[in-house]
Image (cartoon, rainbow, N blue to C red; front, side, top):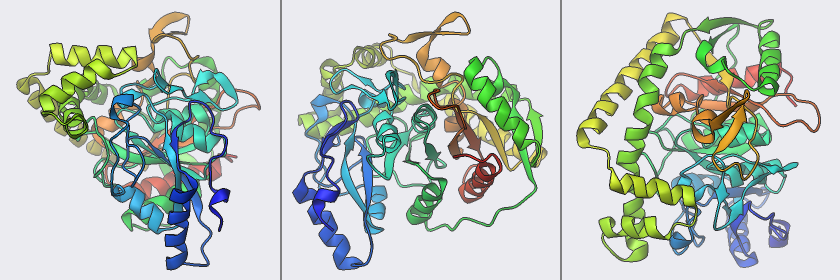
Length: 429
């Protein structure tokens, strides 16, 4: 197979930070041919947060562009060994500190088909590369919704495995409590195949009838376009499964307050460890230098605030205790109602307009972008739960809407089986 077949020859502005050259692609093809000459390689994009041999793990930050790994992250190595070819590194919200992927250095990641809208973030470039058809699949990462949100905005399938189930080595991080790599694809079969490749766990056969929970609080205050698509899906689902409304208030009262102290304790330490060898200085000095050199104003402000008012050890310890309590409560809720999964809109509204400056009009009111678009996903990332996002049917030309299916922690194969059954029931295209 010729390398030219895999070159990204006309990279879309904003989607890519770096594309692989012909030599880099041919080297991968030769290695694949030596292992399995009959296999047809598939194209893979990788978020610029994940280590790929010889390509920049910049985290969307020009100051870190020369973070050049000499080995693949385990998730990348697994996919390469299975016949995937890395064709480039995708754009993202700088340092993964946001959900719009409006990057001051590399440009905003635009939603394919709706260029005035954000592709979501922080893994926006990976979702957009799949949505525009440039690659078969793409790797992203997820801390607070960075796979689920772009998958929903871009109308592609996304999967965030349980935290700790996929390896995180050689991946720049924000939170060891919440981070995980994830995947985007145009078919759900690709999602399940990739999960099996990385974990070795086969997907069980479908178990029906299903019992599905609808968390009441995650279905409230929805944009009319989102509400219509989700309500239509629930109406269809009720014909094929037992659907139960569940009160999620107690869980949200535990998960929402802990998201910030966990990230703002862990992220400075992880980013300092990443930046120190690049800047050839101590971690403390590296973090200060990084804060000075980031290009995106929102990220610069966030880092400056973290340095000026760090999270205390006591607050972090309390947050971690609440995480344990929340995870136990979540497990009990699923058992109490005998639920196979929860379903809810990935985001309360479709993709925002680029250049919104952090505020959009939602239900007639000015609303901050970050808390609005992470409202439904934060809880699952704190819980460490697996989440699969499915594109709902919408009329041609309308903005995509995603339905997230969330399961029990470390029951990912069962969650994927449930999500695949829902896909068939709801006749997704």
